[in-house]
Length: 50
Image (cartoon, rainbow, N blue to C red; front, side):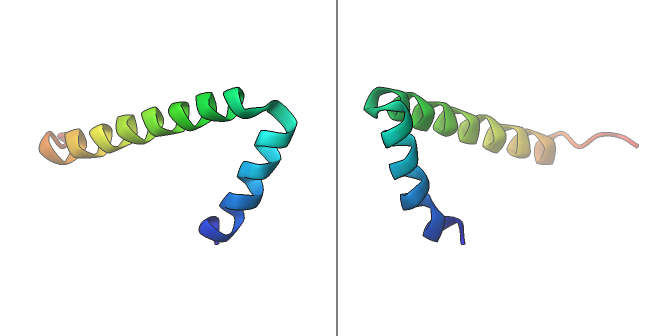
């Protein structure tokens, strides 16, 4: 479902905020993706002792 909505959402962001803001948004989302991936990897390597 996300793949079906992504082109429409991208077009909306481009038309509402412009191309530059869209590139910054994509860069921020990519950075967030890397951070979340690192956090998941780190949590599997060092699980909490509960």
